[in-house]
Image (tube, rainbow over all chains, first blue to last red; front, side, top):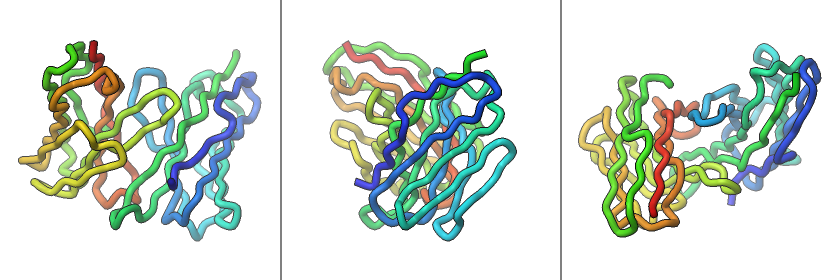
Amino acid sequence: SQQGEEDPQALSIQEGENATMNCSYKTSINNLQWYRQNSGRGLVHLILIRSNEREKHSGRLRVTLDTSKKSSSLLITASRAADTASYFCATAGLIQGAQKLVFGQGTRLTINP
Amino acid sequence: DAGITQSPRHKVTETGTPVTLRCHQTENHRYMYWYRQDPGHGLRLIHYSYGVKDTDKGEVSDGYSVSRSKTEDFLLTLESATSSQTSVYFCAISDLAGVYTQYFGPGTRLTVL
């Protein structure tokens, strides 16, 4: 399975601290994406990193990709209470002849005031 | 939610009854997807569509069928609902093949008694 595996499954930190989530996958990919899901809502795309990129930034988000280790990390700096959500990595690649996204099980992030 | 609506938002039904969930988009995106989300499994792809009347199976398609007669509508049917199909169902759209960003609807919570 190409499914990403995320670590940790749950993370609780104080507001203002940095949060790091990791994603590992098993097969070659076209790109890797991170999504956020607030409780009771749909997923929202955060950032996409292509297989030939090593690092990407978007506001307080920093994503790294190491294709040799088949892993990615998402760093959220200066966390806020509004960052409380579940975060999913999704790997994009060729599966059964079609390009598809495969989602990990997610990391539940709680930011304590 | 990027011009995507799902109906109904909540449904309770009994084992053995047919159920149809509707996804409607106003973005004119070519690709549409149905996922289910369950604790411990993340999001799993049920079926997807790459154009009007063009559909294909995903990872967990048994017990489900889909139809797409118009660009804007993608229907998911549970032919004879079972308790194992109790889940939250998400529709997603993409303007390019699945390697690119997907936009998600708000979800439908289905309970099969």
